[in-house]
Image 1: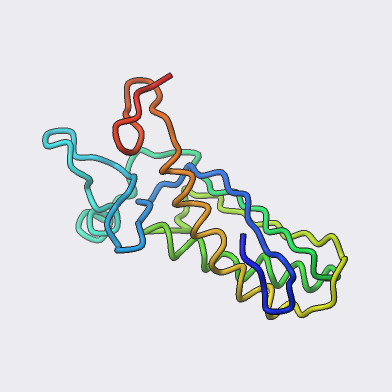
Image 2 (image 1 turned 90 degrees about the horizontal axis):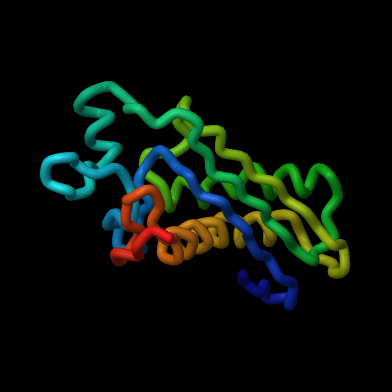
Length: 153
């Protein structure tokens, strides 16, 4: 969540099951496909460029809801949702692939005056932070460790 200069809030709630790698602030991979032999991250973007194949990752998606207390109408919410996709692309590489069904919704409580442009600018940053937070908090599943070795369960 971030606060605009006007005091208005912009936040994101994100569910992450991306095909691409989730990148940290320094560009290193936080979560992604691993090489079966070495256990190291593959670098999915480089692998895709090299092989031309996406891999066996059906039904992937990133779902994001951007919320603000700035009064926005339908067109403003649509614009905010549209630009928030840049926040997904900043955190996931590669993003928006044919196997992804990335979707962003925007909603407004309508309590404050403000502009869709100011909210949209913030909406490019809040999903990035939420995606990174999600993978940092993830627990393992089906024998696959989460970030920092969080065990399944």
